[in-house]
Image (cartoon, rainbow, N blue to C red):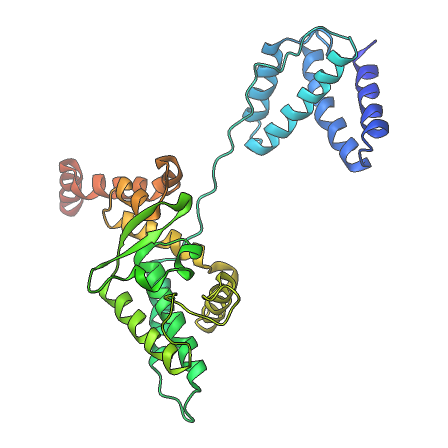
Length: 319
């Protein structure tokens, strides 16, 4: 049976036995058509294809500029096709067995600039401290104080939003300049807390008590079912604040602020291992999504601190 017939038989199986949609069949047909054409150029067909042929085809896709996800899709189609051929007795092995799928690059996290974070926090502070006429209700005042305290705290600590909103009142211990946080896997870690965040928390708790939500178990109490402020409530208030200062709502979230915390302290000289501990990452590889910040810092260091860079500036100035 020729290559075209084998491919047609496979697509018929997808359609009849698996109920594949027309669009799916078209996509498989295109990807496998390229595979069959690649084999034909080497004088082979699906029945005689080798692992080297698969590797060469994947390398050719990469050379053509296909994204890793597209390469992985092609390999998946080829792998399933050859499993079909094995099951049908067309061949006694699978040439794709030793081929690894292309690694997908983790996308860089969205972050805000330091100036944008400053604008968010400063606007939240002004709104929290504003004296309105007529005066705001205690509940409105408490909500403004809560948003400011949440903002100061997440940017000062880099906590996950789930960790932030569920902080117990006991997390802030006396005058100690840190929070005790219980993170993933029920692991505890100490996270430094700025004076501004501590002051914002105190003002928030005072306003919360005035609104009838006295200090209880939670640092950010609420009348929600959980008893504390929800992630959704924080995200909603944060996006509304972003719109008020001219930022798109889609650009701002509690998680984006966590990324901003990590990126900004790295840019100011923090060690990657320290950031790993602060963020509560079990594996340093998770923290390495921020290495683009370190790369930029290294370039800046070389350009500004290397003796040849200083000489180049002097030569340029005397030219």
